[in-house]
Image (cartoon, rainbow, N blue to C red):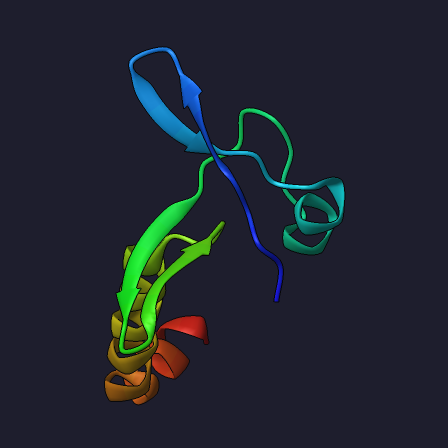
Amino acid sequence: MQALKLTQIGNSVGVILPKEVLARLKIEKGDVLYLTDTPDGVALTPLDPSFEEQLSLGREFMREFRDTFRALAK
């Protein structure tokens, strides 16, 4: 666990992420992070949670119409 300090950035408050955290998340200045609620609090992630949902729906669609896709591929 790592403690982070809140700092004033203009009219907002921000958190400065250490280089090690940036490297672990594979992010850099200008990248977008997503804040999601979890049972334990909140989580910051570089992965868009709505994309995962869309991917899951796409996989379900592909599984449902597997035979049709195979026929079209021939």
